[in-house]
Amino acid sequence: MARLPRLVVPQQPHHVLQTGNGSQLIFRDTDDYQRFLGWLKASAKEFKVALHAYVLMPDHVHLLATPSTAEGLAQTMQRVGRYYVPWYNAKYGRSGSLFQGRFKTSLIDAQRYFMVCSRYIESNPVRSQLVAELADYPWSSYPHHAGLRSDPVVTDHALYWALGNTPFQREAAYIDLSQPLSQADLATIDAAVLKGWPLGSDAFKAELQQRAQRQVLPAKRGRPFKIKPGTSA
Image (tube, rainbow, N blue to C red; front, side, top):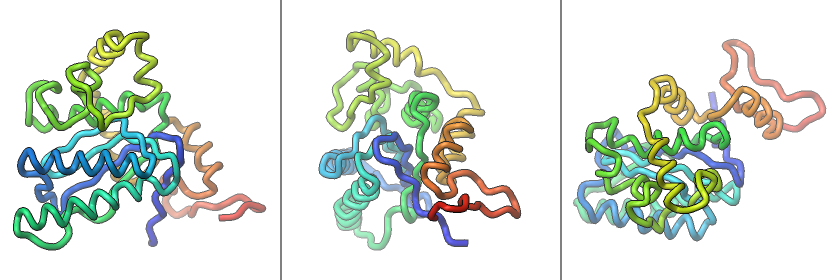
């Protein structure tokens, strides 16, 4: 069955996942992380994508981002790949693809899942036992949100600003939120981004499906998705 086009809605947050080909390393030293972040920042600015949260793991990348256009996410990731992959291959004497196919994305119901998804992304290094504390990992947006350093890659979302009236209040509130996620939340976010489904309430998904006039929910076994008569596919 042909795969559906990526569902991208301008001005809505999206969880993006890019993995190494065959789970191979895509970052090996400090310079690799810094180069990738530099190209990511420049590409996101060029294509008007706001990056709210991120983590660069040795073999994969998670982003929480809001594009201004339907094409912005793809343009940003493609541009990063055009610069980073040839540079990485030349540095390490390798050839061929570095990333596992096209990136995956999940549209986020911001009111319900934005903060949960941000915590999911930034807590990856602790769950993977790379560090003991979130603040110990240098390649994520957590130090920015916790007030440990300013990160020029990050554009704060309105929901982050709503955590308090001052930077100190927002940072303290965010730290309080940064508790381990439940297994149910982890499984829900994993499934959504790996399968490309929206992450939100049933009402959010149903409304999105009606607006998009395409399948955005898992189809029931044996029953194909149908567009209502009088609408175009």
